[in-house]
Length: 311
Image (cartoon, rainbow, N blue to C red; front, side, top):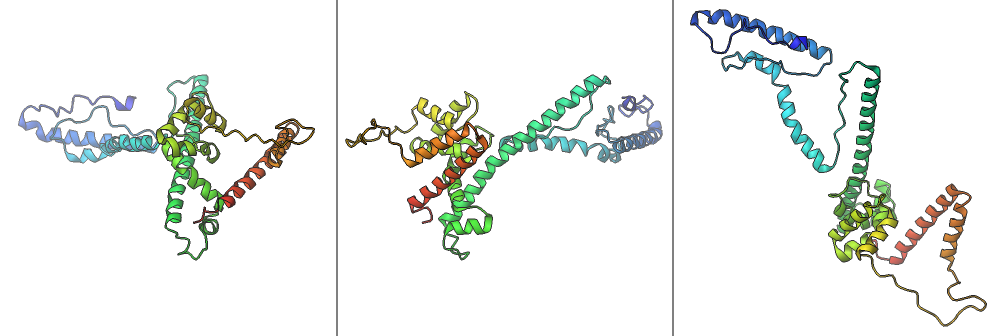
């Protein structure tokens, strides 16, 4: 801080006295400005933060030569709030800048740097989640436009799925899943910066179609009150708020298998689910892999049964 001591009163530039001393005062002022400029250059070479001198000539008659040396710092700070506002509006966190602690105690310095590392990790994780969320929306908007305009024909492809697979490595079912949940992600981007994965958002698709975006947001916030937002908690929140569609009970049939009580006959698909659930008790990794394979196969089957995804 000694380099920023106030200038000695030998440079009385404010409210000058007799006119006869103007020339000497101008010489002293130029010399003082040169010293300040050299000091700032030394500070910049030492990688110290650029800070304007504590005392600078305040009179309008000061030569403009000193202005450029100080002013470059101020416009950057003046622009910073605008840049931060844009980032805040988009939901991104500015990465914490590196600073050194004031304390010389090793323990306190370690604690200071440790908090900085945690802050950097938090910002990086939050920004990654927000980027993945915006990626889902950005892809969905463009895929929807390409599909609605049937641009796959211009590229020489028979179907929209062939175009996305060949050009972008996005399988047909993946593209259609993105299109299905993208409006839900748009409804949620103003209330959360969390990464919006396709599977949990499926729960909210019928809610959006039946009750609108506000119902989607209310369901998400209700699920978030209880911790992790997953498909299960979203279903529970939708039921609590009355947005979930009523469950259709299976029709009662008079024909029952002999020797078995009513309802004991399980379909092959349910048997597969129960088999994977039993496998998870002994081999969780293998069970998860088989469940993902089953999920992918069922999804593709549903799309084939729908019959109109590429129309």
